Image (cartoon, rainbow, N blue to C red; front, side):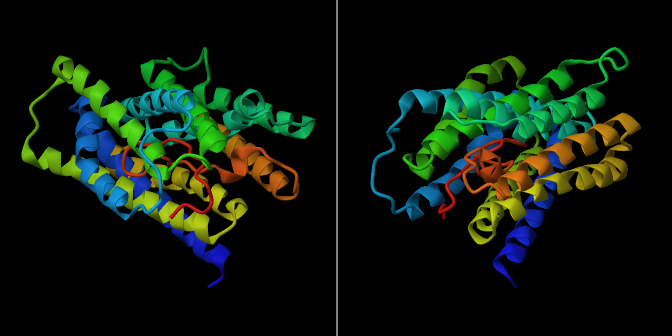
Length: 315
């Protein structure tokens, strides 16, 4: 098997596991606040993070070299996580995925002020077309837009912002530092808010949250392996397979069937994102981070989706 084929298969497996993970989030979201789900999922992720930390042989401390960027990324990651959990709780799976798929387009925009990168006319057109696809999904004026739609948009924007920051500092910061700070922030913030929303949880629901943590961690490791094996131009588009899982799972478990607007808008967004990815693959001077983007950053720590830019040599 070629490295690219292996990378593609690992990425497909990762996104399939993540999509299954999102079903559990949606089930739990019918009973519990996203604050409570995030809090307990973080607690149950700490043992996995500890194992990661024990295996890390990189020299250095857990003090970030870029504290202000780390604070900004941590805030973005916390917002992304709780927004994603809420969106999946109240919106159809396919609709949430369609909106979050706009994140690579937003990364292209944010790379200009944060990374000082140049975006040429064709890429701008692709970004604008993709954002039009988001409007097709949302259909303002025809659809009652609620907090769920706002949460999905917040997830896309927050994930893109966190991703560009990792692109900026990722080669200088230890992986465990990038991973642990959002975990600690989620633990502290969600723990402080927990008394306002807490609902007693039976042991079986705690078991479901444990599944969320294990699935996120496992899929994250698969995705890291995918990027270490294959070229990003092959691996990155595999994230769009989630729309197929969303359609299947939505129909099987929640009686959800995507309407024409969601399907059409998803097609536009996916086509725009893939155009940007494949165009970058032909430009050796391109520095735009979409090619290094993948939709799951804080392995085992963040909820549903975020878009990370780990260094390629991540182990």
